[in-house]
Length: 238
Image (cartoon, rainbow, N blue to C red; front, side, top):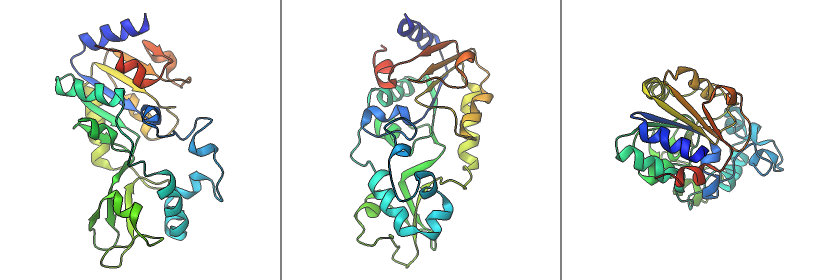
C-alpha cells in the first residue's frame, strides 16, 4: 500500500525535490558511513572522522590520501534504479532538483543535471597553488603519495572536509529548489549531519516522504515513511 501511495503522490506532483544521503548509493556498491558495515565501523590508525578533516589533510597528507584512495574513490560504481528514476523525472519536467550529501557523482552519471552537491564531488580536484583542475583518475593513479600539480602545488579533492564550510552557491540553489517544491522525498540519510539536514526546514510544500531503513528525527513529520532500500522503492514506480 505504501508504494501505491508514493506512486499517487509522484503522479500528482508538479515540482519534486529529492534530498538524499549515503543510502542512495549503497545499492551501487558504495558503503555508507554510519551503518554497521559502514566506514565509521572499520578500523584504521585514526578514526575516519579525523582523517576526513581539514586539519588532518593539511598535517598528514600521505595518510589522508592513503585512506582517500582506498575508500573514497569508487570510480567503477554505476548508477542504480534510484538515480535513474530521478533523472527520468527531471527529463519529464517533474524533478526540480536533487540535493545530495554524496560525493560520488552518480546522479549526474544517470543523467540528472540539476544536482546540488552539498559536500562536493570526487570528480573535481584542484591545485591549491595555481587552481588547475584534475580528474579523479589522476588522484587514483598518481605514483606520488601526495598528488601534486605540474606547478608543484598540492592537489585537493573538491570535497567538503570536516571543519570546512559548505559552498554558499550550492546552498542557495538547494534552498530555492526545496522552497519551490510541492513534494519532497528524503531518502537514504540519517539526517544527523548539519548544516545539511537543516535544509529540510525550508520545505513549504504539502507532501513530505521519507525512504530510509532506520528511524530519523523527522519520521513523525512525514506523510509517508517507507522502510525499504531506496533503489527498490523508486525502481518499482512507473
